[in-house]
Length: 175
Image 1 (cartoon, helix red, strand yellow):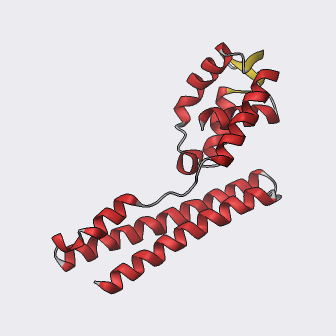
Image 2 (cartoon, rainbow, N blue to C red):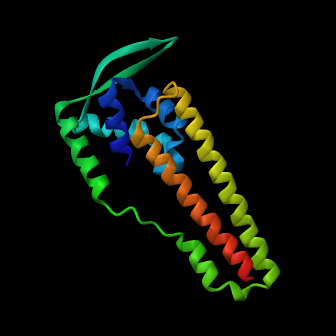
Image 3 (cartoon, one colour):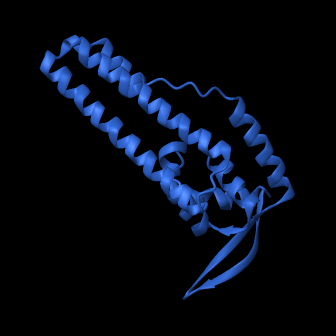
């Protein structure tokens, strides 16, 4: 996933590792993609060795220099392969930890189970609020012109969280 995001962003324009990190932080990529922001530099160095990116220049920033990376023709081909793979791999993910807990909820007292599910409810509410903040930040960064596919992604994330919230509510009613 790191390679896909980095190459995709470099396909838009040349950037430094820092610039890539900032964009990923703005879009809350750690949350929705599982990419650790700190892994960007390692990925850039590895992809540079593999010929997918190259340094197009060095910028002076105060007393520091930063390398500006650009995607190569080979990197564009690799990016297409990564996109194709990402669109093909199943995206069905189940909340297996929650399902396992539900399967054995009777090992807890009804009050303990209720408290745990109430915590799950709070966590899902926080997740929803975080995604909403991410949507607002992305919308502002793109000057309120979200592409339809980006909007679709956010709508899907909201839908998934709402579905989980409904599941937890039903479980609480059954207790």
